Image 1 (cartoon, rainbow, N blue to C red):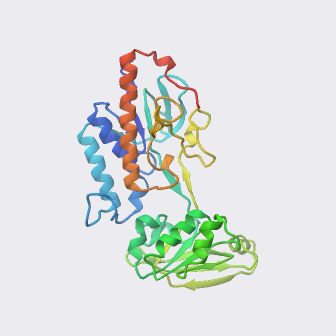
Image 2 (tube, rainbow, N blue to C red):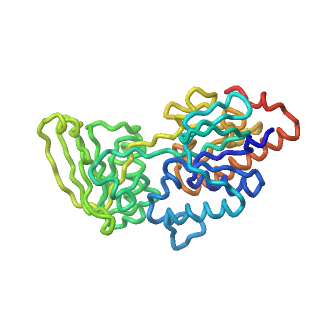
Length: 344
């Protein structure tokens, strides 16, 4: 193994990537962390985190990320800007082509590139994201005790968000662009039967009102009896507009895992792009993907929980599994040319 081949590269600098970096650097793996286009990930958009263990008074998302980076750097992790655009993982060493034009070679890779929440394109959403506009009710719902809030979406995620928010909010209104939900019947029935939740059918969110100082104060909704009012408004068809006073808006229209750079590789993903991970011989979960030496951590393999604390846990798993993988290869003297397993 030449000096030009790294032991471990970690793609992503959110909670999962930072947790992997702390564990890997303490194991003397000298990890290189690629920070990507949004250093720190989605947590940097959250103004306050109240459910992360060890911070009874809460902590800012950016502060939590910065502390994690400092901790990883203290143990020797190296950070560098760059996004993986293409990966060749069918042999050793793994080859990573970066957006900077650089090519890296590594014996192992932790994919912690996260999943990007889909936005709806409403006016002012970029300004108000993290200031009353959120993509995670579990993360931010408790900040809206006594508020009237909107949930945008019509799938199971939207139903789950609405039910969770109903524990805190004065009222919850689900805004859906059609008159039929995509959610499963059991989830839809739970929401329909809840006294604190109502629906605005054939309606879309056009703009959000407020400021970063005041937070969300209201929203403009657009509706049409035949549904998809946004498209109709753009084509010149008359639609109805309604301004409502709300203290929070929650997007629940899905996430897109950032795994496009693995197209054409043996790293298996589900139909949405989330990474599959293997179980060990005893049936217990691991962070190992379907290609030896490639590991998954955080939201990139988690369409269900998507929490900072679970991302940190899988980050540590990925680093520990990578360490075991490297130690096994070193102990057996396995040829680097035969390290990649065939997808199961």
